[in-house]
Length: 192
Image (cartoon, rainbow, N blue to C red):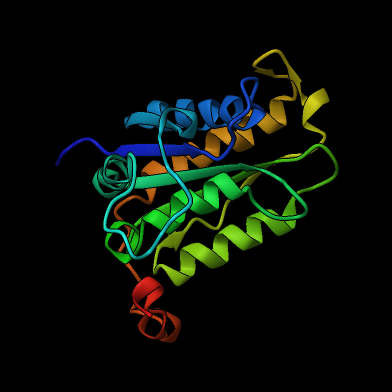
């Protein structure tokens, strides 16, 4: 059996991104469980707003390849207006059933304020619509500016929770998928 490969996608374009810092803890957890890891920094990709009439735009083929080759994906986002970031939404729009169906996905959110539940729920909904298997465990870092000192997460309970997300991504990367949902057979994506 080959080594599990976990990809984390950072849905933030900020230079000092708490999302990227938190995802690194999740990837550390995945590595401790024996996986190879890769952080996808969307700042390094040319991904114009998706035009469904075009087959490829910018670096979309490279993003699709990376997600497709992953055994598990962890999606990380800052919370914007109670949901996940537009840059992550755009990246996910380039992907589809081919990349996410039956794939294990973990979700992580960071927020300037209180617990970022709605952003996590929205990511779960999108992943379920793509027929992915979303980990029951999720990670959130509220009041993020005081949760970090530089790139170091200060609260050991949060460190454990975020690292567990990475370990779970490895442990459940090859879980037997559920039968297809009604939604997945009805959701044709950008075909209309």
